[in-house]
Length: 381
Image 1 (cartoon, helix red, strand yellow):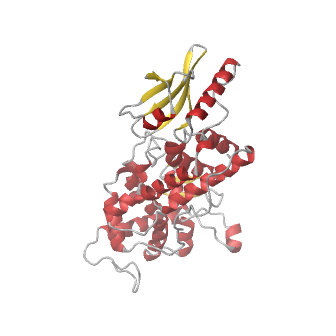
Image 2: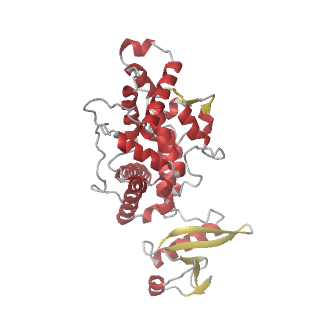
């Protein structure tokens, strides 16, 4: 901690190997917090005998003059008995209000997950008014490099909704998002993993900890990626996984009998965390880096959702009746049967998932010629 007369030149050239607060000699409570990677404005105060600190913005996005104005505003609020925090909210504060107001949305859990894992670590403490186009582009670039273009596009969509929501409530706010920020669009193809690709993915997953377990579980249960990613232990009982309607795409409960292979995956996962496959600290989203996994296994050009499509294809190869396979995936059955047949098909689905697990086992650990792919199948490997 040091007290200096802050100038534009000092702020531009200030460096520190360890986090250091440079307090402004001219503005009470204002400090430039400098570390090896960033410079941030903070306002320090004492209220009711307790010390506090609020973030005012980052430098140089927020200039010295602007930071002094915000610190003076905060001091005025404090002396008037109000919250010393300036009126401008951080992205995290605005996002939390948005998530609370939009809590009725079915996809709100997924949106919160994206904010907590991908957005808050980089931009959460920044005043939302200070976030510029370049900040958003850099965030998306980092996500694309670490988690792929699809996740970057998901994040862009969530940010766009937040900024539009906030702009309705703040006439002075302008969204930093413009056309052209999207990454390569995910293709709605029919990608399924070949037997050789499946072997590589499965064997690599064996040594990838929680992320590897997550990939194997998605394949064994043919579920959607977020259904497993946000799966709490409370949904697993008596060897079955019941996904509640509010978390399922069709807005109906979906029952997944857990096969012996899927149960083995769960038994190796820590039971101390509320969410089975989510790292305790969601900020460490590098845990979910798929590009690194692709490099390790030598298989590229596939998405996690392709595991669901691959599982459905394997069910057909394993002799599962199409009607039962569709029910395993939670697809709605059309026509009159879909309306009047309310049977859960618990036993039939359990056998189907065991058949799927058995075929995966024979593909991953082939013995002689016990796997005979369909003639002309893309899965010949």
